[in-house]
Length: 145
Image 1 (cartoon, rainbow, N blue to C red):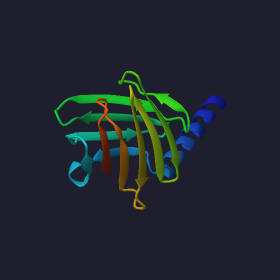
Image 2 (image 1 turned 120 degrees about the vertical axis):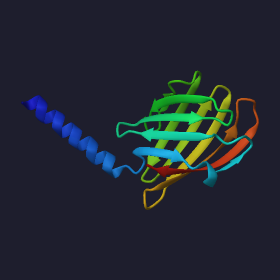
Image 3 (image 1 turned 90 degrees about the horizontal axis):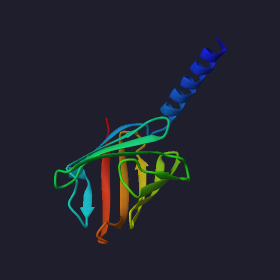
Image 4 (image 1 turned 180 degrees about the horizontal axis):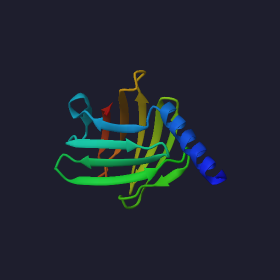
């Protein structure tokens, strides 16, 4: 009985945290409202953010190649990215903003996201160098599903 009560309290606390976290949910990239400098835009991207910190990404690049990858965010700590070799991310969330430092092989990128007051859109700016060493700077608009 005690174990069930603890389990219910944990689930309730997780639900409360999710309700207060503006990032939790499914976000789809609106390619038409986004700006891409230094490379072709992706065809599609969906980001799913769970209350437990797991972030899952499904994307189709400009050439039609699909990829799926994920990580579990640990505020301020580097997390390995599953599905992408030699990669990691450091994430810091504060209220309705998030900052990332991404590492993909020799590429390093910085990202900054802001969820709107309505909670319906997120603007995410990211810049750095691609795997070929070419600079890029994107402003991506995501819509909550």
